[in-house]
Length: 79
Image 1 (cartoon, rainbow, N blue to C red):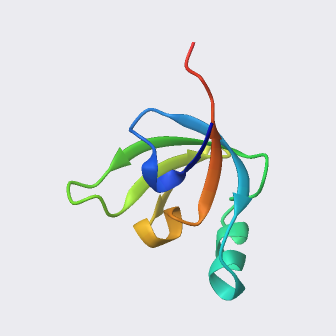
Image 2: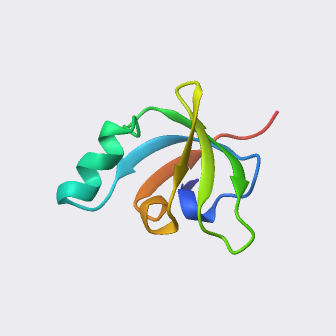
């Protein structure tokens, strides 16, 4: 099932399928390591929903809600 990162619940993991957007913002996401095929784990969400803290490639990264709306993932089913 495909879902945007902003729709994830805490503890969910997914594989990046595509990064939407264009220009500088899309390039910035790629530079941070958010590329197709990469696994992302949602660790925390701030009380008002912005920002989100994720684990990607072995490090923690904080994204704004507007950035998380551009990342489309395939949800990995929990075992």
